[in-house]
Each structure stands twice: as structure tokens, then as C-alpha cells.
Image (cartoon, rainbow, N blue to C red):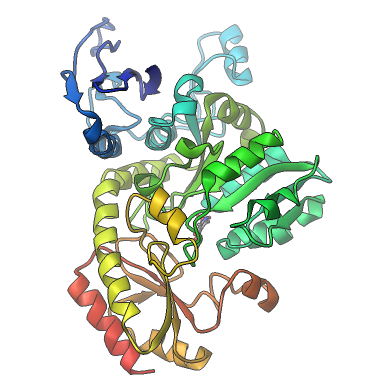
Length: 459
Ligand code: PLP
């Protein structure tokens, strides 16, 4: 089987079967400083891999995309290795005719900050490559991404892009509290309904809520904070049988552990603020989808709403992604050790992690996830008071509402991330007053675990 995809600015040819020939950047047009001459060069020699090595090959690709994705120094007039930061808001256009076409989106080019920015585009291409380079369905139609000011801004943009008054979204109730509040309360003024599925693991439960005013299906995997995983392929098949798209928030997994487009999802969203950035250096969100769908969204609601990502922040996040692969591996090792330690502790009633064998959706997680996500939710053996005492006794782990950072954080979701929800809404999202969420960092695990153990003694 032969397939083609756009791999950054270059053409990636892939021949799958017993021989995998990976020939990247073999015929790339580039401009050499000042001369604008066309050059052809081969960057990677042909690498031949056996079929059993295909998973390793895929992982190596992700590693490389983290470092190089979305940008080629040969596209830069000076050959800068570090992606350049273009702060400027406006760009000169050669003539009125071209200007008209560029503003309409019929011709590619930068016009004005709200319509697109070269540094933001580097980040967008990088995330699109991470999510889509191996998604068979996207090889021909192409994959692209649209960066937004935050993860919530990305979700808000999708709502206004797809829905008008009277429409509905069918979605799982197990969501990050801010997403749930957005869909349930903020957009209801526009008469857009959020229809929560009773049992998201049951496909029939989804089917019952879909009607001709449904605009898309939405799911978060793994869910924050319980780590529920849903069968993306089955949900995509269901959505497509009604002619609707499936949107997956894959923030917690990151593209290193899960790439929903490969399982039939139409759009993937991320809060880039989290593990993608990795060091709490900036807020950002992104929507990844087919090139055509993203272009349509970019040229309509995105430019009107104006919740664009600032180039400085895009640049900082792109730098963060350089270490994403290695950080995700380090998070996974630490999380595995912490989950094992907590599962045996007498003051912990329950440990929620998607790859704990007693998790209700363990089978799906074991099939889809390529490693241990760094989010763990525990139910402390006690009530709210004991749980707060435990949190206040932590000395090393920091009490923050954030996650995916290189630092280890502990969060009392009941009173913070999900605090805006009514008690009933919290309960239906599985949030309990004795629950603590850990976002496991990449510090020394021999410092993280003893801190949590000593705090558990203080309950
Ligand atoms: N999606 C998930 C799974 C999240 O955990 C969060 C925030 O915690 C968001 C979306 C919202 O992202 P942001 O805070 O960047 O708006």
C-alpha cells in the first residue's frame, strides 16, 4: 500500500508492508540566503525497517517531530535553527489584487495578526504533524491545526463554528470542570444545548441523544481527573453514521501517548497550557483537523472572535514541545511508581488511573494508550476535613490547579477545578470531596513518594 502525506514543508512518502521505506525531505525546495535558488537535497538516507519495528519507527518519528516539527531552517532567510519569533501584527502585500485574495483566504500569506502569524503557524504545523502524520484517513486530505488563546478558547471556537440557536452537542459528563461549565452554562444563552450521555461507555447511550440538531459528539480522553477512556473508533463510527464529526480533547494523553485521528476522530483539541508547554510558561489551545475544515474555521469564526494565540506564547510553547517526548516518558515512569505505592496504602480508599487494572475502562486504555498518563486521582480514607489536612501537610508537592507541568501538583478538585459546578453536577462528574488529583512531575520520584507518604500520616 502506498500513501502520501505532508510532513511539515516536505513530502513524506511511505510504503507500508514488509518493507517500510522512510524517505523524508528527499526533494525539498529551499531558498538559500539572498539567492532564492532551488536546491534539492537528501536529509535522511533510506531507512529500511521490518514490520516488527514499525512501532519503534513511529515513536522515533514523534521524537523527531517534537524537535523539528513545523519548521525547517532552510525556509528561514538566515538558516536559524531556533524557530524565529515574528511579533509583528501586519505584513505588506504586493498589490491590491493579491491583498484581496489573501484577505479572502484564497491565497496563502500573512496579512494581519488575527488572521495568522508565522510563529504561531510553526506551532500549528508541529502539533498537526504530531497528531496527524500517521493517521491514514488524513494522509490524502492533509492535516492542519488552529491555535487559540487557551484550551477553553479552542472549545468555545468549536461551539460557535458548528452550532447555532437550537442545536445541540452530545457529550460525556466526565470533563474538566471548566469545559463542563462552558458547555453547560456559558453557551446556553445562545440556546445551544449540552446533552450529557448517561453512560459514556455504552454506545447506545450516545445514540439515544443524537438527533438532526446534533452538531458534534465530544469526549475527553483520558478524562480529567478519573482517567476514563472511551473507544474512539466506535464513537467515530457512530458519529459518522449520523454524518456528524467526533471531537476528542486529548490534553491529558498528549500526542505522544494517543493520537485520536488515527482512530477515526475528526478533530482533536488540546490545552497546550498543560504538558505540551510543560513548564507553565504560557496559556494556549489548539484544534487539529483536516486541512479543509481548519481552513474554514480559521477564515470564519476564528478571525471574527479573535481569541488568537500571541506569537510570543506560541514561541514559548513550541520550545516546550522540543522536550515533550522525553518529558512524557519521564512522567510515565514516575506515575507508574506512584500509582503502585498509593494502591497499597491503607489511608487511600481508591486510586483512579486509566492503566490501573481495576479501572472500569482499563481494557480500552490498555488498547489505546502508549504509556502512563501523568494524572492520578485518589480518594482519601476520610472526609473533606481529613483530605484538606492531607493536602496542607504536603511539603514538596505543590498545591496548584494546573496539570502536566514538570513539577508535581496536588489539587483538591471539589473546591477548585470543579468548584464552579453545583454539588449535583460535581457528583455526576464523579468529583468527591475526599478526592485529590496528582499531576505527577518529572522530579526525583524518591522525593515525590516520601512527601505524599508523610502527608498521609497526618490525616
Ligand atoms: N481540557 C482539559 C482536559 C483540561 O484539563 C483543561 C484545563 O485544565 C482544559 C481543557 C482547558 O484548558 P485551558 O486552561 O488552557 O483553557
